[in-house]
Image 1: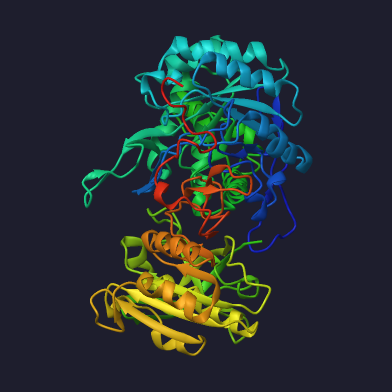
Image 2: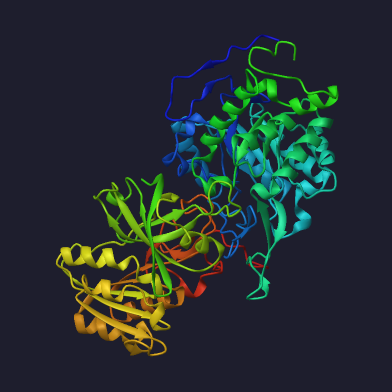
Length: 342
Length: 284
């Protein structure tokens, strides 16, 4: 391994951000930085651009777009929970045509790496959205949301059935630009997430987004009725982080080479580092954007510092590191300048 | 454009059933217009309360020793607001704002009636002040269930043209609701605009009365929000657009102030069947 040179950036305010190679890739999607937003938590980037320069992070993952405009579910759509929240938005959105015209055009012009999340209620709908996106410019990758819990029929969640999940992936691949990497977003609400991961990988997914929200429910003890109009909702935030890290770890074990975009309750750089060490090649910051609108850039800077402090010269060295140390049965000391033997 | 700043608590004081927090918020006061709101992070950086809480901006001080400060009014609704009201002088506080679309002010010198329900009166003080500066009448009606739930009765007298109080239990002012006397007030002062902030039921009644008396209404809604900046889509309500189409719009960025005659009040909490993107009816 090449000895990494760890320099120091000029002082930037109170926190010194080490110059460390943070570039990474998800298949043939090359990213200058490893932190992205998460679908449904950043709209199409424009609002967050008021709080930080969105071109400085790895990219924007847009809110899942469907074929037609969709009003979503009634309110209340949200309930705060310990270290997290439940949402039941129900995929409200403008439909793919308006999305291309307004949101994607803006992202393209802004020069942002854009991962377009798509959702459908049938294999055919996914195919038609992919077809519509095929000739649009400004798409760096497609994330196929097969795991939104806020759909009318829970038994139609493609992510819960390896065959159905595979069919969606095949349809999207057939109808999209072959140069566009396809990420598939998985649900934690399955008996064995590695089974779904392997099925979508076999069907041609270039990478996996791990994880979507976990299905949850809150009852309002004053009204004695479910708190959400949609009754159940997706649980997100730090509360689900250990589940997400476990899912990344399990998938990395069985699929050593598949690109993984890890997410689930990332609040700090150290949280992001857990995902990287567990096997994620990049991470998304989702719900914590609601808490801190500049969280993605902050997490990215904190991650650089955390990697530097642990002696990593680049982000890539840290990917799946927990598996390697685990296999050795020993902890490798990786202080700066003393890591050529790793 | 909103800012995200680390402010500091200057003062927390009880006013009736509420607490008023004075906080430094560098850069925000000069950007604030009546009707804007801020969100506040709850419980510090490690908090298990991950969602920010939204508060109408009550007052701003652009200058002074603190380089800009503002007041917000907090009602005790749960653990988040309890934490907030337990803050002490010099405690740090995480502020994002100013957010939302503020009240639209009339271009001409017309009479305005301002209606506040409970601590919904909070944003009306700056509004009354600015209306008077423009030479507009600002006749204020404040109402609540009981006297302790009224907010700012003495303070608003300094900026309003007239003040009328209603309480449902009759503990102060007229017994009844603000809407009982709103129509009469619109006629008496020949008001062209009604501004309102308070519970949704009150806003619905205000909007209807304004229409009946041919006044324009501006209602500031209170919907529960997760982000306050337009990314989470939790705070939507059905609003009729200029094109006549009903859309589920975000109250944080397209509101919180809406034209009263554009909000489909009776359909709040539902997706009207004719809203853009509403689920198709079975069999159609």
